[in-house]
Image (tube, rainbow, N blue to C red):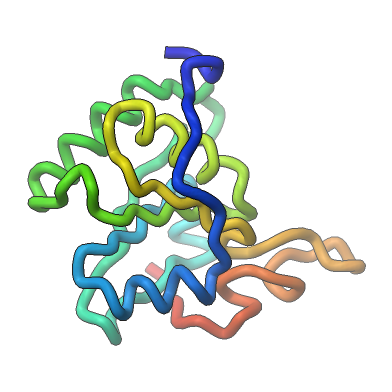
Length: 148
């Protein structure tokens, strides 16, 4: 499966809309596709207040190329084990919204009908001082997060 095989996806959503959906819809799932290093050193979204945990699965490991087929197989297996239906709302997040867009597209192409890309990601774009986490994104919006 190459990137040209990806179809569309359900759409782009803000971090605030994502958190509201995760809060109000018991079927909604947050999938963080960043690397293990990012989870450890930058932090992860906290869904403790709504009784959920994000699914942590790397789009690709640091230093490797993405393998969309392997990613889709691993995530689909994990979602099946969790009892997540193929029509459940899935919200994909990464650092700034690029990897998560690809992940939403590939999971749509394998039959998940409600895959959303969290546009600003966990840290958002670079600010004028070339730092992430202050201009936009999960952290900048003041949504709950934690260090692992």
